[in-house]
Length: 624
Image (cartoon, rainbow, N blue to C red; front, top):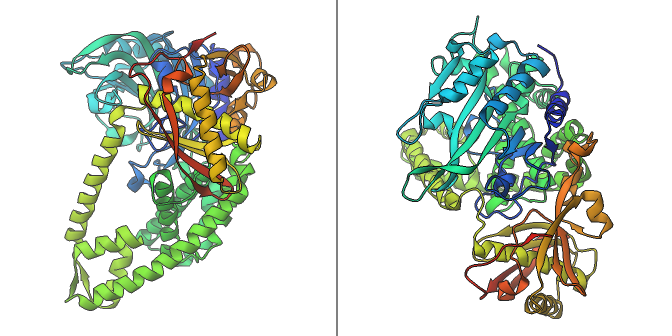
C-alpha cells in the first residue's frame, strides 16, 4: 500500500479519472447557489442534480471533481475517529454513459492499482433486494470478476444500500459501498457480518429507477452513476493514521490545540485523556468547517447558514473552555491561521479571505463570552429557586438559549450541591431534535433541487437584477450570494453604502423594462477564458480557480461553462456564467418588485424581491 499525502490522494484521483475520459470540473461553493431546499452543499452530486435529471452538462457525460461538503446530521459523532462536519468528497459521474460494470471496474482499479490497497483489506456491500427492486446480484458479480472473494461481499437493505429519491419522488437506485478493514487481527467477513470493523471509504450509486407518486418504481430513461469517496478517510488509510485527525493536514492543527490545553491533567487517567482528545478534535473540526463557511461569504447569525455557523463556532469555544483554554477573542482566529496555512494552497479562497475569517471568528468568540456571562446569571436564578434538583427543562433552556452543555450545568450544580434531572433534560433534548427533524424534512420536501416554474423565474430575475445593479450603481457590483425560495429571491452584492430610494426605484424600473422587452434567453458552452473574453460576468468566480483546476491540461480537462445571454441582436442586457435553469424569454417573469434593501455584512448589501404574474407553465432557455 502506498503512502500518499492528502494532497497527493486528491490529485491522484483527478488524474486517474481524467485519464479515463472524465472532464475535471470545479467544486461548487458550500452554499447552494439556487437551491432553496438545503442550507449547504452536502455531497458532490448536489450541484449536478439538473444534469443527473437529463440536462446536458458542458463537460460531457463523464465528470469528476473534489467537492467540499458540510453535513450536520452526525454532529454529535464528531470527535470520534472518522466523523467530520466538513469533509472533501472525491466524486466521478456517468450521465447516461457507463453504468455498473464500468463504475465498479474503475473503483477497483483506483483502490488497488493507483492507491495500492491490498485486496484482502477491502470488502463491499450491495443491495439485498425487496418488493421494489431485485437483489443486486449484477454488482456482486462484477466485484467477483474484479477479484473480491464472495465472503467479502455483504448484502444490506434499503436503509444501507439504496440512495434516494431526495424527495417523495424522483431518481433513485441501489448502491454498492466499499470498506477498509479497521478491526483487530486479520480481516473477517464483511460489513453485513462485522459492521464495526469495516470503515466505509467509497460509495457508487446506480440511479436506475424513478419513484412515482403512487409509490411504484419505473426504470429511468437515463441511467446515471454518482460516486463519492471521503478524502480524509482514504488519506488516513494510506498514511496508517488511527483517525482522520492524525492525517498530514489535520494533525498540525490538532497538535496546536492540544499544546494549549493543560495536558498534565491527563497523567495516567485514560478517561480524562479520552475526553481531552475528543474536545480537541471537536475544536479542529468545527473551526475548520467555520473557516470554509465564512470563506464562502456567510457570517454568524440567527437564521439558516448563519445560525449553523454560529452553533459550530460556539460548540468549538465550549470545548475550548472544557480544556481550560482561554477564549476571549483571540483563540479561534489563531486556530484559523493554522487551518489556512494547511489548506490555503489547495483552496485559495480561504487564504484570500483570511481577514474576514479571523474577524468573524473573533467577533463571535467575544460575543459568546458575553452570552455565557448572561447564562451564568440565569443559572444562578434557576439554582436559587431549585429545591435540591434543577429540572430537565431548565437545564435544556440553559443549553439551547445560552449554549451551556449539560456537563457545564452539572459542574455548576455540583458546586451548590444540587442535582440535575438528566432524564428530563434527555426528554427535552429529544423533543427538540424531533422538531428540528420535522423542520428539516419540510425544508427538504422539494428534493435536492427545486426547479419549479416559480424558482426558475426567480433565478432568471437574479440575472436581470445583477445587470441592473451594475448599470445603476457601477461595475464594482458583484454577486456575493443568493437564496431562492418559491416565494422570493434574496440577492447579496458588493456595495459599501445603503441604496437611496431613487436608486432602488431605478433598478426596479430597469428590470421591469427588460421583462417588458421580452428578450430571448439562451445559453452557449465555452471555456472560462472564452467567457471572460466575451465580457460575461463570473458569478462566484473564485470557484473556477480551485484545486480541481490546478493541474488541468488538455482537452479532457477543459473548463466548460454555460454562458446565459438575455437580449436580442441590438441589446445584450445580461451575460453571465451560470448553471441554470432559466426561462426562455424574460416576459415570462410577469413583473418584478423589490421588497427590501438592507445590509448583509460589512461591504455587502442584500435585496429581497419577488416576481408576480407571468405564465404558470414556462419554457426553459435552450442552447444556441
